[in-house]
Length: 543
Ligand code: F6P
Image (cartoon, rainbow, N blue to C red; front, side, top):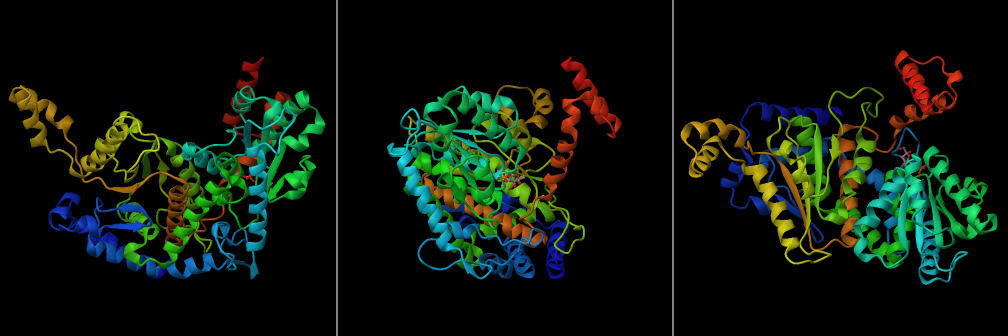
């Protein structure tokens, strides 16, 4: 954290240590207008952050923190295409992918819009052809699309296609990511080679998992349809177009993107092809438009209306002032069942860092552990800990006003549960209340006194709530971009590079060294005693 920001942070910490913090409930009691004052809109999305321990003074200090960290200056550097990813010497310009109209967007002084529009147009005509059957395979119209990728080349397309399931009118989509053969076996057993389109998605086209799965899919396909049909059934999405042609993919069937698109920000690029195949080019355009609307909002909304800024600052308060280690994302929207997994990569790969931009270890916490599951399922699994555990877990609740799949009163019940949870987390239940309730149920004083402590909810647990009219491509694009910019702002305040991911390298290097030892016991050497022991046991069990 840079010096001016540190001094604002210490004011926030001192303020909390003084013990003058009011409970969230009492903040509502003393301010009738709190809901209006502590919520903001980004287009049709309402962001309610009133159920946090944040009062006017704290919020003002948080805005000062953002200014002290030069969030606006760094935001402008981001949008102007400067090489802010310093450890990889790259610009970060995924916003250009969703930029509409004819205005120029620069990376290193060059307008990148013509190339973006070129790829988007090719994706559009290819998807249209696949969807209407004018582009077909050996067995006629494609019925199934298998996206093979991992990390950002998987999670974005998986999450978005799941979220937009009600809008699918194209071929069925399947995803293979894990190098565990179970993943590809399951998918291949569910499709027919003659009517399947394989989409090999990899920014680098070198990732072990993806290339292994791609080769397996290719061999499986060739066995059934022959080598000559590969050109019609395989497409590639990559920045490494030399490697895609080596794999045997026709240049016509390769859709490129650029090094200034980070993997976890790439669903807006050619990596989104499987989304476009599922929902059509118009649906994909709507997704992009939603993302762009948030780019404009982030750059123009005032601090108190700026949703990604507010999301980030509340997160900083929880992490660096309160010391909360994790953050839950709880969509009450079944179609968002992969949203938390998607955000794990976005947030934890971006901000799970311990070295600052100055190359020195940072002296404060950075990214929290991000996790979650859709409500109401989570309520019957881990909410116990959120309500009564020893760790406070701030959570984002996400709900649509209108269901995509209206069935009876399901949606009303879903919404009632979402609102009930945030209320319960805030208000809690005192010992006296618990005791009185048990007495009313017919227990005697002794029985009630014994059980009541277990029924106490401390409350005062912070939540944010997002409400939007209905999950559609535009709203989804907004939601994703809101979290992207939240992560950006937090990275700026922590003074780390949110756009590299060196932490994934060591495991990859060691896996490459260990592979020969896993394949051949005689080659085991030079490892620590535990690893050697594990390798030997592995071999013994396989005999
Ligand atoms: O996990 C590391 C990572 O580099 C991610 O950042 C990326 O999304 C993923 O691997 C996949 O990389 P690629 O698209 O190059 O196959």
